[in-house]
Image (cartoon, rainbow, N blue to C red):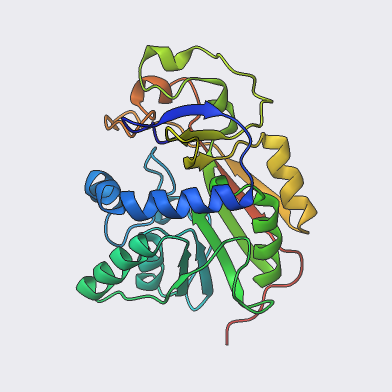
Length: 276
């Protein structure tokens, strides 16, 4: 949840595919520079960070061995994770809805010498052939921002090869019961966990400027299995004792008692493709 701007108000209401897509594209295009100015040092230029808790792929190894593997990053932002994958020996492709974020990714890729293919596309309509990738990943990208996240699961399953791995992180569903507040107010549950209405920030005319959708843990499991994938792990990172940084409503105070992130590790049934 981003927190409304001065002229916007936050609410919980329905928001369909088109409204969610338009809001996400507009918000990330307008906020790309400010977002990266605020969080860029934490995210790094070629670092794979799964969440505000700071869990890195280099430590967690949730994707397995990425060397010589074809990897798709879904909702890549400025493609920090994809550049880490390239440096680790993978063959990555990075996809995002926001042209501004992709421009920042292109500029950093040129500056670091770690340029990866960047594609502007909707995560519910992946522009790739069936069985094109060995691994797919998403660190807080795309999945929470679309109205039909089940379609994202189905599309990822389609483009994965048998034996392929799909790992994605999202706001922990439990957080939706609590106010989006890094302080003590954020420790008191006030909304139903089963209220699936999305969080919407909207302007004076009622037009959505930001949309983030809520699903329960059970909803996520059902989306994964409906796509023909197998959930093999659910990681709920603990807040590190030495992490004092606050990211929005993620803070040491809340992180010690409430999970902030859920990372789903999934496999597509079938034997993994041999390395060529």
